[in-house]
Length: 237
Length: 217
Image (cartoon, rainbow over all chains, first blue to last red; front, side, top):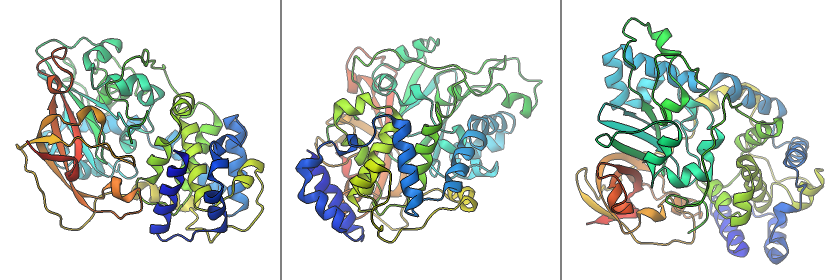
């Protein structure tokens, strides 16, 4: 299997126009020696990543300041607060909601969000009759520009395996009982479309402003494993 | 490939464990692993990065955490494209000159690169072989290379709900065989078609399917 894996990657890279270097040729010749070459590096991931970063900086392949900026972007700038603003706008502006459901990319861009892992967005609406749930059974596809990077449970084998075969059981595990008459729609993100759930606006929030509503909208409600409650939970849940 | 990554419908993976107030990264190294994977401009084509994760041996795939798998696959891709050598990865020290680096991302460029993303749509015309409302069957194929056709849909009948337009085809691209752009559709499968009578009669699973994954039913 490792040999076919190497052949495959070598072919891909050659076809992509990259130079096949002496090192690659060496790796192919000795592929039987490289069955687990990823284990030849320190097994502690922290040490391994530190060593890799040093190496790539030394070789001029990455710029450390760019790494800092990327970490800062996804720790502090891009996250579920973005999605919460989109949802709150849709709840308070019917014309915006219509645009969001029909031209999701453009409507999300109106609020300044878009880009990596949200290039092709689809927004699906929860109603009293339909409940939507998003998963990626093949990896961990997730709409970064509006929700940030995915939580560990979303990437877990437990969630990825069960969401498609037992959505009601999964929802129950999150504390949500879906009535029999409500249709569960599971969206498996197998291509490059990225899904955002537009949750139902909770009753009793008619007096609230768009900004106040945004504070109620949780990450989990935009994945589809929770409803939005009238009491603020914070977007981290 | 029929790998461990293709998890839809499997049993026995245990309970889902949500974490309250979960941090974006659980350790500094996770953030660095994410950033390295994002920043390295490697010569591999669209889809090869996902395939490099899928070929991690199954016992390792299940053992490694998410960002460990990212680093494992990044190292594999970089070694195999000659950007680094295994010896360099092991020692953390450069021992030879790299081939000419691609573009090296700078801090000043990060915001615009993140905002631009990397669209997988292709601005070429391609024949749409299927129309919304049409009944289709997911083809019963078992490619050994990269594919985004989940096993649980193969041979099952669904309905085309929407045509999303023309996208690069990862099954081809990841093997270096070119983008072969084609239409991607949202296909709705009744839960009972996929899983039998145990499922709720109202439920369904929507799966995104490239043109080559389906046939008229």
